[in-house]
Each structure stands twice: as C-alpha cells, then as structure tokens.
Length: 177
Image (cartoon, rainbow, N blue to C red; front, side):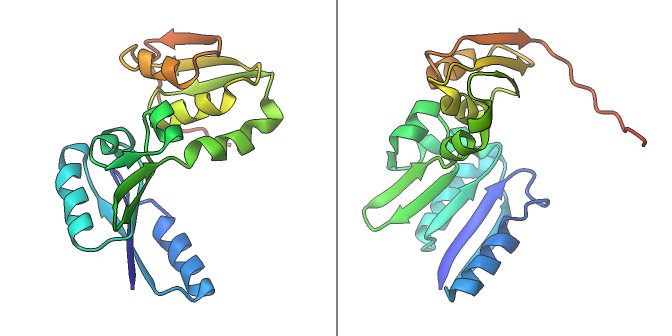
C-alpha cells in the first residue's frame, strides 16, 4: 500500500484526497491518500514522521510550499527558481522537492501571454505564476500587502517588467444577485 498525503493549513476544504483516491482506484493502485492539517511551525515534525513512516510522497499547499525547501534532500531546478515546493517524493536515496505549479500555470496562462495580467499575493503560487510568464512579453502587476517577498518574486522572473502595488487592503464582501 502506497502512503501519500496532502498537507497545509487550512486543509479541510481540499478535494485532493477524493481526487487522488478515485484516480488510484480507477488505475488499480493500492494507495492511501490522507489529509493533514499542518501549520508552518509543525512542518518539520510532520515531514520526519512521514519520512520515517514510509510515505511515498506529500502534496503541499499553503503555508508549507516555502518552508519545505529547507527539509528536502534535493530541490529540482524549477522549485529552486521559484523558491516553492508543492510535491515531495520520498525515494530510497532521499527526498526531492518539486513544483508542478509552474508548468500548470504555463499551460493555463498561455492564451494570455503578451497581455496584461494581475497576480494577487506574493507567496509560492504567485512565484510559480511569475516563473511561467518569464520570457512571454507579459505585463504583470502584483498586488500584495507588503514588500517582504519582493526579492523572491523578482528572482522567480528576472526578465519580467513587474509593477508592484503594495499595501493593498482586500476586503471580503458578499455579493447578492
């Protein structure tokens, strides 16, 4: 039985366990795909528990995409470029952190290459989107609350002309139709 899990916080809304379990069942693969509520400060313990328990891999979501880089044995070049890991694979030779986000964004955003795009936030997913837009002639505006991740964003897409709107206060409101 292959042991896998998705981890992050909050995680209760994630459809990953259902999607993955269904896919494995259809493929005839015996796998247990769990869901774990893991806060950033608890990731180290969680990572080593999974590694020692024989897990084959982890899918990561916020806020674990950045901190996980410091725990894996190897980081693939794309994940290193964007300083974000969304998948950890445990192998006999150690663990490797990868990011499938950049390739997914590249496919998703292809119709918008060369146009104007706005990105909300400055975390690992935003860096993946920026990395996907690299070299496409796209004008990018990043809306974020602070400049604390400015350098990481720039490293993800050095050749992009990025406009930063800092200190944006986003307010949720219910829209009735």
